[in-house]
Length: 567
Image (cartoon, rainbow, N blue to C red; front, side, top):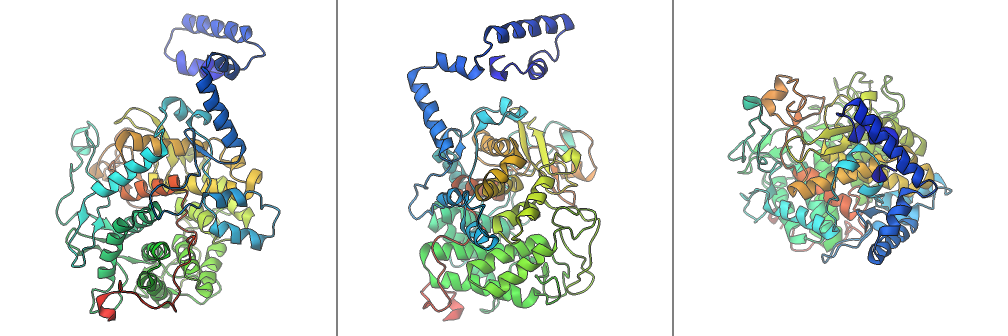
């Protein structure tokens, strides 16, 4: 009763669910008597009276932190400068922008673009069902980050590059127990080997940004060196990257997507800002201009098409243009940035079936097709990444998008709770990939936590606090719980394998991972992107914001890290 604050329905649900009626009545009566005995004294006060002086001091310290506007992760200040050398600390920007709601829209957006998200709350304050089940995860912030560092360092690397570069495998080895105990529909490959293993450029770009922000620059450099060799493999001519490669550096997924390559450019921009290396900046700038030249649209919507070469994918995706907005901003290319921002803004209410949120894309039957593509799933990243990038300047539209996104999945939104039946049985809170998906997808969840904290930091009491309630803290705790439990963040905690997914398994415990709702699924494997995104969340390092230090300009003399073909 003390732990529930005498909330009688909650007490009955958690303690008496399976008991006979007589026992329930007896226990409920005892609970009522207990509450009457302590009438006028909240449960927190009775607990405090029993605490030792040291515990009281810790509680006072945490209250002071919360009152000062600094978020907390399990009792630790969320805004803590990374201890590794060279890491950038951007947490103070969000605290500053929290006071800016009365400013003009133009000045507000300038602050938002440079601010970082502010994490709010701790496991103890969530109040959701998941909070009661989770143990305090990653009680030490540096321990959490150390787990992420160790996972990324131990992830299988593709090393078939002449310049010493390497890429990380997208998914780590299966956990003990695989996808569950349902036989053929649960068997997961213990460890991916050979030519079928994916090394996705997007996952590696996110990992490179995390490692840069963490100050692990040589590890980040190896990823960029590998990408540089792939970008300039054609006799020194720049070729944009395929979606994924094999362990021998051969293309595996032949899609050349604008969004993936924009993330690659962002990774170069962050690294160049951290090191001051002009050649690294020049490569990222070349990627930006290559995309812009081949994918731009000049109609009333603006923006950039989703897939290259030109004519290959004629649709325009909102998420890809969010990425391009951020990349162009990092390199000071205002015209390219404005083109992307114009498209993102135009996508609010573009799908008549979803008038209060951002549509996923246009149709794509001809080059720069501008027609509505009604009936498409609504993507989670489109909503949350727009907040982090500042691509759309309208705060009312952003708020409307968040209100839609944070609805429970049963009500058409993204918020989902999964039980980790193959782990410790914890109920974990996250967001699904699209409004048609099933099951939480943890990469999107980490970016959602960052976006909500960012929105709250910028708009204060009118922001995410009044929209997300306890969901933000619950999602944050669920990510950290996975780090504590597995040493990484999974793509999905749901059991089953690809065959279960393809056969539309109805077993709720083994459905074949988290279904995106748009043709593929994420299985129960450690996930590079989800783990790196969680690291960015812990560092409060917004990957869409321009780096704290300037990116070397196009006029900066080139240094010795340029591709050999440039000489």
